Length: 357
Image (tube, rainbow, N blue to C red; front, side, top):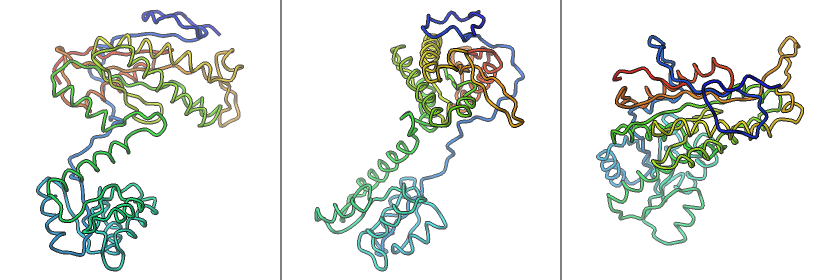
């Protein structure tokens, strides 16, 4: 079922069936448009909370003092049993746990934390006077992330706490489906470009009619489409060369690219063509050949949904308009994505409104 040819975006030739329209446009007339709430949420200024579990009050106070000195919030429990009660009331970001304690010791506490789905990902640093290798092995086998032997250096304690927190946060925000970094890393990437004073563009991408894929084939096939888009975007990011562009996965079928303004067109052009070609192979042959899928609505009526395309919204931070807040750059890109979705076929909408933000 062929469609109207490309009008204003001459995308590179594709071997996919000519069933989609692709366009690229700049938008400068939504001056009074209301910005949508950003789908990438702010980090906030909350300090990391460290739970110190030690029956030695002097050691606990020493650890607490030094961690507070370096900007952490600290809560204390005198043994494993009290630690479990404290965690019920207030969830810490990391626990520093002594090995030898009354009632519930450090090994048993760590095992219980790992067995509970609500605390299984809580980072644990084991703190003990025992320096034997076998004790370290037992602690790590129970699920501890790191190990410190008393007496310890204060700088080493703070460094291990900071690095363990950083690794844990990076691990949590990586998409298990695509392996791409998530919201916090996206914000940091934009903040780094703001700090260095370079021009940059933020692109917000998602799949049009993605729900029709899930409704027709199920979520497993839907995941295949998301993975295909991730790979297409990655190939496009690599192809544009230097300076290196960034690719992140917000969640679901939503992705973000951060790149130089002059990389937007070649990157998005390559991604669209590549994704449409791969996406066609993910449809059943009958649906692919006729150019749509048939679905039943709630009343039992048959409706048609065209093959998937991409909507891409782009915000530009350059001499004409400078974004200093990552969330504002993302919000404008999200607004432009809404504009792109109002157009047929794969569409790239670029914000051209001028003025310092």
